[in-house]
Length: 327
Length: 268
Image 1 (cartoon, helix red, strand yellow):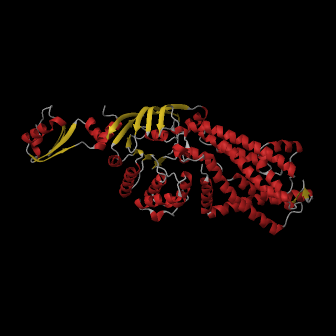
Image 2: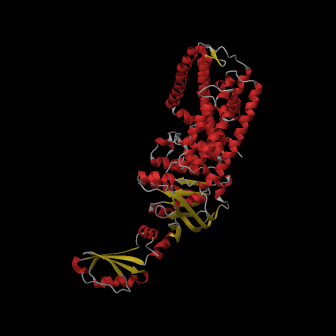
Image 3: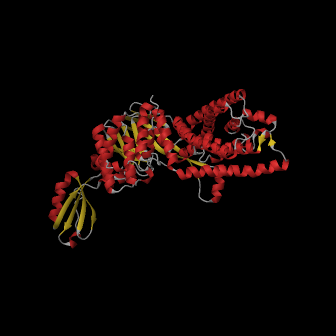
């Protein structure tokens, strides 16, 4: 559904030093800098797949989404979405995509949601009975039927986001771009929206790209993630493998029966490394194959009251990849 | 291609305008009072000082009608708010139109015409009120030709849409295009007969002005309603008007084609 090869994009922005004098200077002479937003990005996403696009602010996530949806013009490389070049913005292309941007309401601010849905029905040419069937389903699932005739700008952030989702999905798009769909929402709304997206995928099998700063969004919805850093893809693969590939092993945490016992304790380097010790607790990182021997070594050499073996926290790992601490 | 969405945008925009009733009527009244108020005292003084009852074929009440017509027709012709397209480019809300499977220009024209329609209703009510209160000015006789105001206003609205859109699209390059728009609006007022009726310009100047687009946005429709335009000069005027409209639509399209490549959708 989505094929991208060697995509690049550079933005030219002018730079102005702060202060009045520099403002006046910039009237006559402007300093320009090139910002590389995307640097030969290649990826491929199939039908029914939800891919989590993760990266720090300014890493190029939104630029990628904007190019895939035909809003901005790429500088180089090829992009095909449903076999078409998004930049041409043909109606056949636009009838089958949706873009949801959480940071900004895109709909008609002064109209009640019901009115803007009517407008969308005409824009997408959805047959009347089909339209009311879909609309009823969507509003019921999101539990927002009672807010349909209130001006959009008078709704709460969460309600507005739900309306955005309905508006974006009324025409059953085959390719969906979700940019921060849960930003700024409370836990309940976040959960409702996640569930809703999952249901939509189940039913319609679109190709979806989801960007989010909330790891929970990614963990519940995406099997595959793409991590992007400074315009380059640094990881593309199953979410589950991130942990395996990018962490040397599991974490053993032992709580000691007597607090002073950590003094002088060491572990052979082939079995693992001590990450931290405080008086009553010791944390050891252990390579996967050595898990059993390391555990018995700890149990033999220390008197412990509790022991836990865990995977390192996934969001910590992804964050460290995003920031470039894992090569 | 199904074009019913055009009607829905038109209706949606009308609902939107009517959602702000207070603003709607305040703008209307302020606009008219300001215009007529200044004109009344200025021309009262001019007429008295010269000791005449008509000037260039305008009686005093005819002059007042002209100054009522100029802002009212102006509102119909200038349609939706100035600078909206430029702002949408600047703040990134253009993005949503790029996503929808519709033509951006058609979309904007429908919104524009919705405003024009609402302002036409204001125009008619204000004219009726004027006639009821002050009667028809002596130099005006109602004639069938005045019905041509409908196609004239439509064409003039399209011309203004094409001109302002062309300029507003420069927002792809410049962050602020407001000064450009103000220059144009001012030129229309001065060179289009909005400040002083065209009849007061020297005849050579009038001839040149009649070839430029500005007159067709102000004096041309006003003079038509005041019975100062013959059928043949109306036809001639409509040809010039249409030519300018075509030129500016082509320009707008070219500017769009180049400018949209620079669009980055900042802000969203």
